Length: 207
Ligand SMILES: C[S@@+](CC[C@H](N)C(=O)[O-])C[C@H]1O[C@@H](n2cnc3c(N)ncnc32)[C@H](O)[C@@H]1O
Image (cartoon, rainbow, N blue to C red; front, side):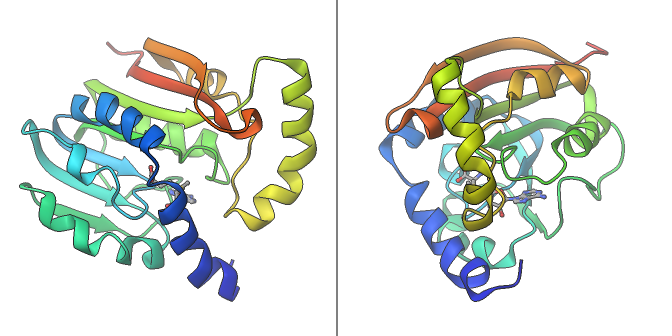
């Protein structure tokens, strides 16, 4: 998308919406689990940076939107590890096989056009003992909420940077061959169609 909306307004709006205290609570719980060489997919405006702990040696921050990554600039100073920005889609990650210890994905799998391809890539670049740490929103358990998610997604994804409200994140992970080591499925604050979270840690089937 190259419209003015997608290019200029959406990155700023995303940054604003993603800065909430409810999101920070999840970031504070999950992002510190990352260690070693880390890839963050859909790094956005760098809102996770201040939550990484001392075990991180190097961060690859991947996001196809240079505009949103530009908003991360003032947050980079909080990091005491090197950060390399990768301006590309998670469907094709320019890193070697078995080269990354942790992958972090927060509120991103909803927006990737082909999440199956992205998860295949994540699995490829993770080391055998590597971990995928995720906080994602997606398909709700109640049929009534799900029906609204299905109804609204076709319009919503056009204005919200490709965001799908109705992806079943645990199934996507399992289909990609991940093992769910730890997963919580619950609502966060706010409207239920946006707020059903899948959060936890997954490993490759090799471990
Ligand atoms: C809702 S934002 C979340 C940003 C950040 N992860 C956070 O927690 O604040 C979704 C992000 O996914 C990114 N994104 C969209 N398509 C993508 C793709 N194909 N590969 C990787 N990231 C993508 C967007 O540019 C945006 O930064």
